[in-house]
Length: 294
Image (cartoon, rainbow, N blue to C red):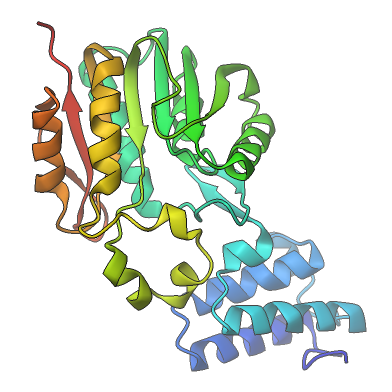
């Protein structure tokens, strides 16, 4: 089978794929079509424009049809491609890692703002990313903090393998260490910044998530327990014990969870650091606290 794209030009195939995605109510139809056609042909946007009138080979048509069917069945484009860009870094994905989302860049932004406010951007820093997954947050921070060394933790050895590969690809292996443990349980010493994007979906809400999340993201990275706060109850006290005086903790929050998370931070002896930072949708996405000097 050569697929429905056999003999079509690159431009015609891209437009046809966009139309199929739109008819299935895929929001990112044009972008997904361009990325998938580009992946099949090994071309970036400029290359697709240059090759617009070239005809697809039978093998290319078959591969594109396979990609199309996978996307139409709900598989995220990033999963099909095996990588996703985050903070300008191309990150490899695996079945053990979440697909990094733009919302999570809010955590990176707030962490950098807090470091800047404390005059610490150029200092030698120890930072930790608890539940690092693909390493997205940790590597984004290291890319902005040339004098920082980071530690990423995860209970999944497969996730840590992915993060290690991403650190190498970004040229950050010499400043990134990965540790197999539950949140901060395997870390020692003091840290200037701790970040985390833990699971925060209420268990009862998982069945109602979009298929691209529910069926393709690892369940352990989604399920936050009955109220969605189990991970915060575990990691916030662990982080508080490891934070140096003046250090910041920044975590990602689900919609409507920021005040409860701030209360957990206060209970652990931390002081909320300003208002939560909203993402582009207006959701209070990043919550921060500091450990004040005694």
